[in-house]
Amino acid sequence: MTERVTAFIIDGDEDSRSATTEILSQFAGMTVAGTAKNYSSGYEGILKLKPTLVLIDLDIDLPQAFQVMEKMLEAVPGLSIFAISRDSSSDIILRAMRSGASDFLPRPIKPRDIFNSLKKIGSLASSPSGGEANAHGKAILCFSPKGGTGNTSIATNLAVSLHLATNKQVVLVDLDLEGGDAGIFLNLKPKYTISDVTANISRLDAVFLRGVLAKHASGIYLLGEPKTIEEAISVTPNDARAVINLLKKMFSYVVVDSAGSFNEMNLAAFDVSDLIVAVGVMSLPSIKSLQKSLTVFSRLDMGGKVKLVVNRYLKRGDISIKDAEKTLGYDCFWDIPNDFNSVITSINRGQPLPVLFPNSEISKSYRDFAAKVEHYFAGRPK
Image (tube, rainbow, N blue to C red; front, side, top):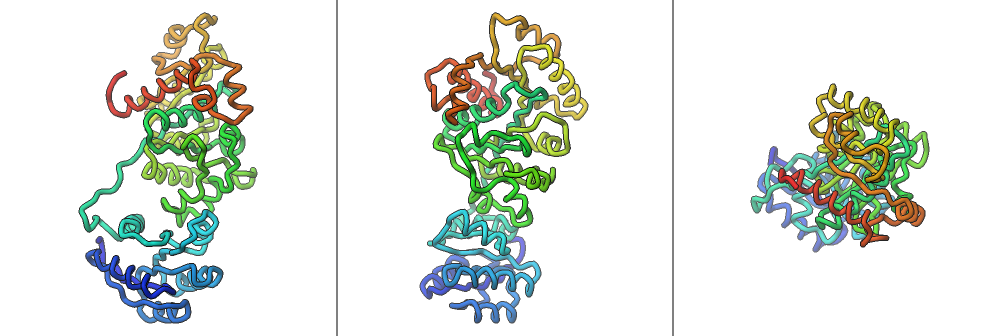
């Protein structure tokens, strides 16, 4: 505990109040200053005791709970609120966060949930059992300076392949804010998007963020692009940085599908990414664009984390990978074979290649690509 925390519990269930008090007493530096069974007496107690943390039961009266949360925050500056409910749907979590909750705890409350919530608000330095925080995941940003080279296809199929190959948690972020199509490639229509997250950036935490992610049948998660241009404009580079950094704490892999420019949004995303996949095809316009981009990455001192990936590669094409490597001064990290029919069918059906055509050559290539990425981060050559 970095400092003493005084907690106040508002819970309509007497047994639950007692159980929560018992859980909080396990944390060194934590004092339960008081409890209440309803909002009116709870609000009075909070005005009198000025606690640093309130745990509030939303199930007593949902609309009233949100109103009293906003009143508490006005009355006690710096107050942290943990909302508690049996209903852990995205709607409830989002409404709680918009009303000022620092975190959301589903019933029945578990000691580990409270521990994690205290870690998020910076009130806990270590677990009562000596546990450690999760290691950070890795962010892989897919970037193509030339349109039409299949950047979204690479990002989507790599994300799915990473999950299937490693059985680790993977999230795909569509950072092409005005023209993103990741949802189409996965046949997902997310209820919430990145703009819903960034509109509540001051309350951003893992519970809130996970509550607004869409889950695909393959097992990966998606944070989709804004639904309107106006919402896209509202997302700032600092917002993108904060979202990616938090997702890295929640997932083993964060795959980012980006727009093809060196705008401020992408620069922020480049900075917090651990691997930048520069996507191109073996055509002169694409190679020319890659050459310019690789020069910029070098000037930004990011060249070391940029890896060249060739999409739609034809071994008997006019330009070979060796030709491109010589021109660009970069070795090819991976190449994806050309399979137009499978790819277009995959896109039109909204099913990733590894799911729709698991035994195809292109799906095998993606599995091997994912394995190479895994080995890359492990520091082992393959």
